[in-house]
Length: 158
Image (cartoon, rainbow, N blue to C red):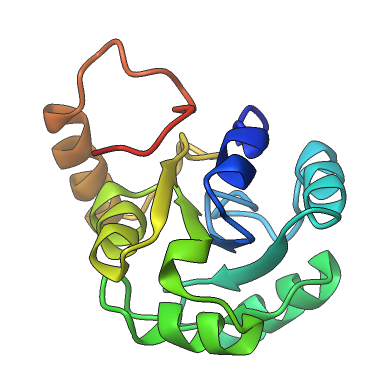
């Protein structure tokens, strides 16, 4: 996450980042973002519009973390479908081509961002603890990813 090539995104016309919450900004089993993530958000927010788009169903968790991080947030986004993404785009006043979706899951964050027409950046999850469904999805993701894939790609996954 911390190694995302933000300058490359800016050169491609990206003005906003739609950020996943659990295991992207905050470990899934925590209610506190690591200091380095909070610092990254503060620096990145000087250049890009930032918005959380989370599939988490816990409205309170998403609201509290959004407030703590100083970012608007959407819960129960139903990614990879576009409802939550479009809601965030409307709030930011941006078009899909002007945003990058950043997240830790290929089949929700990256696939949803691609369907939307946005740039996408896949990042490794912050925590290794997962519920059984998430664990199954990770195994499926790992089965299709090449082993040499860097922890944070500099460009979109295509």
